[in-house]
Image 1 (tube, rainbow, N blue to C red):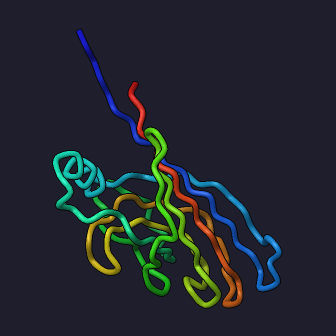
Image 2: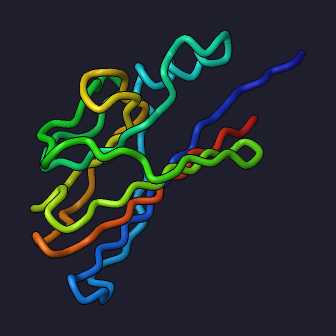
Image 3: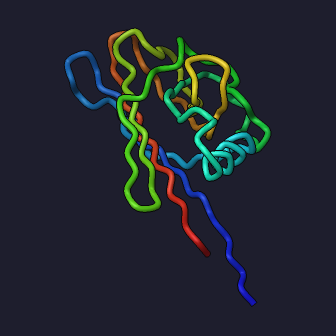
Length: 149
C-alpha cells in the first residue's frame, strides 16, 4: 500500500542592522503555513488563477500562530513588496527588506501575502520581540521546503 504525505517546513532568518550597518540581531524562527496558504498551494497546482506571493509584513501581535489565521494580529507599517522569490527544487525562498522607517517597533510576528492589502496569507510566525529602531534596516529571508515522508 502506498502512503504518500507531503510536509511543509518553513523557516525565516531575521537580520537587523543599525543605521551604520552593524548587525544588532540575527535569529532563525520556524513558521506555520496557514489553512488559507495550503488552499493557495493547492489552487496553484491546478492553475495560476491565484496571484503569486508578492509581499511580506511584520507586526506586534502576540497571539500564537494558528491554522485559521488570515492576517497578522497587528501590522507595523504596511506590507513590503518582496525583493525576490526563487525556487530551487522543492524549496522556495522569499526575501524582503524593511528599510529605515519601515516596520519600526517591537516586532513579534511576520507573514507572507499575495497582495499589498487583503489577499491571501501563506504563512505566519510569532516570535520573541525583535526591536527595530527607526534608523535600523531589517532583512527577512523566508524559506519553505516541501518534502515527502
